Image (tube, rainbow, N blue to C red; front, side, top):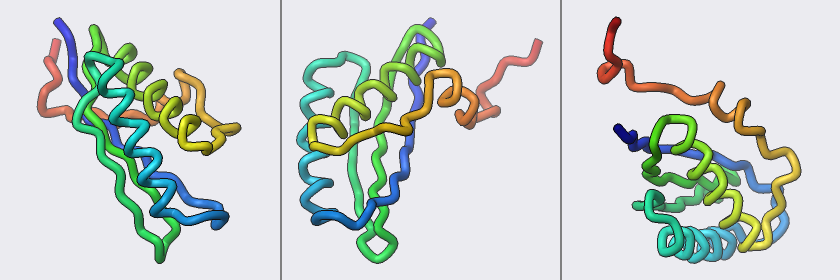
Length: 110
């Protein structure tokens, strides 16, 4: 049985360059990821220039939660790199999993 997760990333811009231009580049790169990865869909990018924040959302499918998170994390990181944005402090897979909030309404109690 596979899972589908909705992921949301929030990034603070460093102030160098046009935030909206970067968001356009990232969105184009995310759409390319959607064309390459079957389980990566419905990506979106938004920007808040006043707070210097870029947000990315996407739905990701995988065999299990760990795989879905790994696929989404890799797709978003690849899109950022494609747009010329470095990710030197990107969290490891284990760190990313520790940050995942789960919707407990769908958890099976044993």
